[in-house]
Length: 366
Image 1 (cartoon, one colour):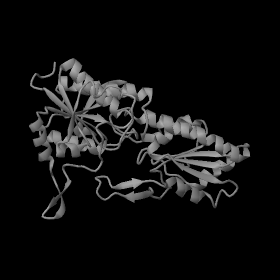
Image 2 (cartoon, helix red, strand yellow):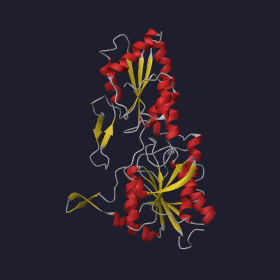
Image 3 (tube, one colour):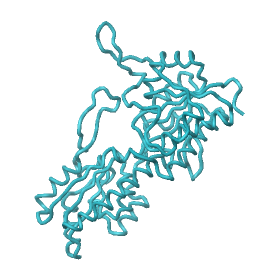
Image 4 (tube, one colour):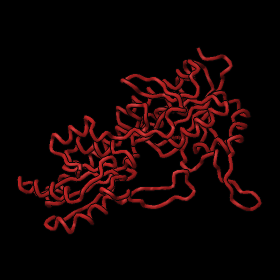
């Protein structure tokens, strides 16, 4: 049973949007209301809504029919760290810890528990609120699948389904025109999307941040394929991939963001580096970009999101505040927020999936 003193909970979604967010919101809301008769509100635009006390009431009607819809009905923001928030004082912009305003707003509205759905940055603030005595439950969210302590984050399977379909479509053009087709996918420091979709889509080369590549070895892979009568090739490259001794390609800097570096363009850089070496084939680059984050969640992610949402409410029953819901050994469990902040789950270059890919002839450019 939930502590009878707990009457009202709040939900917010932070960071980038992700397929499955609405399914989590729906699961939390329906479980809280139907099983525990709790009142539920949702803060809009992530932590900004918490600061501005901008919220909506969530009930059975407001979450009806949203499980299959992408994005988040609560909207999101990836620029609002209330522990380092931009405010105007004496006509000048300064950054200050404004978390006390958020706590005051929650007390004003009678919020007893805050459920935070987000990635590393969002969950770092959740930990900091927990340190200030707020009853917080974290739910991990990222299509990159790079949060530690949890086997899968919702949205990841949808992203790799989308990437795999893109590879399938590029195959037909590549084979028809004897071209080298490069697909750039998201991933930042972790190559999970590239690795999974590359194996599923039968890519010839997969380039990930965890394994620096040699441009000449990639070119040699193409030549080896030619000798076997394969006059086209497919390359899947994660946005954070880099050449041996090189750096990740920074697309631009968002100065007012807690995480200002935006990667992108490595696919085009790879094409330019390959063109002087592989002169007998045209090279084309496709950047999948935000398409990976948009649209309806897959069946797997709808179910996983529902599991995460229900488990978050169960953690309130168990008084496990300051923890994040996670999936381990196919079961929903929890880990303390203090343990997960700043830890990334990266692809093991010696891991099973990399070995499988190598065994079926996929090159990692090393």
